[in-house]
Amino acid sequence: MKKDKTDMQSPVFDETQPHQVDAPSFKGTGIEMKAPFVNRYGVVIGDSLYDSSDSPLNNWSDEVDPAIMSGDEWVHPTNDIGWNTEENHEMLHQKRAENGFLPHDTHDASYMKD
Image (cartoon, rainbow, N blue to C red; front, side):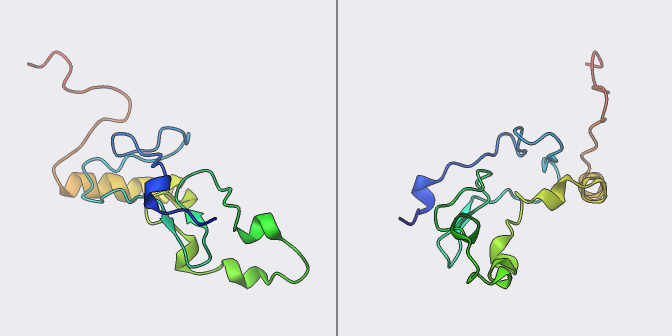
């Protein structure tokens, strides 16, 4: 059974994915969080469940070519493990700075300033 977008729930909350320990916040970066999608193989990409019944991982055999799971249709633009790297966190921090949005990582620099 193939899912459509109305069947999928997005794991996004306030421009981040709080269920992932190192998930970055896209707030202030100008990057819009994207909804999960179904690729041409009927596999849901970006829902953080990683358990589509049509996934080759759930139907593995000696006849499955691992190359079937390569390419952009297997990577979600904003819900991908690659966003959890230090390099990509730094890139998002730079985008925030370019947009004039610079939150402090460890404390609220505006606390009691108003």
